[in-house]
Image (cartoon, rainbow, N blue to C red; front, side, top):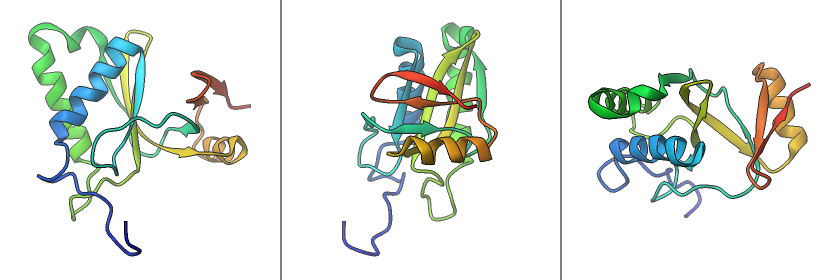
Length: 144
C-alpha cells in the first residue's frame, strides 16, 4: 500500500458487513471466539500478538439466540453494531474486531492488537479491561 493510501473500505470491493457478521458468529460458536482484521481485503485472522478489547461498546447476544428462528435477528444485530462503528467514509473505526463465548453469551468487541505485552497491558488497564488475549498461546492473561 502506498504511503497516504486509505485503509480498505467495507464497501462493495471488500467483504460485506454480513460476511464479517457471519464470520464473527461462526468463530464464536464453532471455535469459542475469533479475531478478524477489518483493514484487509478479506476477514483474515491475526495469528500472534496481544488483543486488547474495549475499543468500542461491546455487543452481547445470548448464545441461544444464534440458532433457529432468532438467528436472523441476531445476525442483523451484529451487522447493525458493525455499521455503527464505520465512519462517514465507510471505513472501520478500529483495526480489529473479535467475538467470544462466555457465560451463555456471545460477545462482540472492537479491539487493538499489540506485539508488546507491556503495551497491551497498559492499554487494558487504561480501558479497565479484565484481561487481554494472547493469540499465539490461545489464552487469556488477566490484568493485575
